[in-house]
Image (cartoon, rainbow, N blue to C red):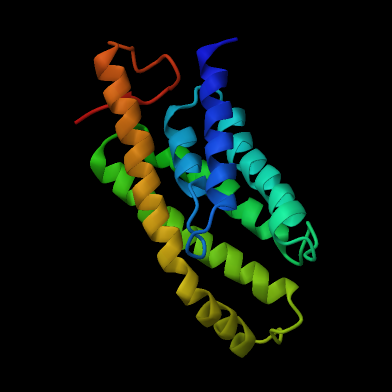
Length: 186
């Protein structure tokens, strides 16, 4: 089996495991995986699929073993998936070159994009929020405590993913085109 596919599988398994162990709200590697895929996966369809597959499979396991009373497809679930797709798509533009500044930009913009899309989805899908401007503000206000976990996990997992790949590429003299279309720069 091709080494690239081991990486894709490993990222999915790591994301699933990280969502099953106790953690702060929204502390997950999936946003960082979305950015990493945008930067390094030659096949951009794979970059789109990996975070969605990790989210879906971990949702199935969470509903089966951790929250058995919750529905797999909760109201507005698809906004989370849409957010990851938009993060990958925006990452394609950000990561024409991969450097620390662009990783920081991707981390910050991805966190904000996820916050905006997922909380808009909560407002639109959940009956608890009136479909008014005040209801939308309430949905965003309710999401504020969760943004910290999203941001911190994206920073941590981006450092791990991008840093590990950079070390791997240097140690084994791997051409940066082996799994990616972007170039690594300092």
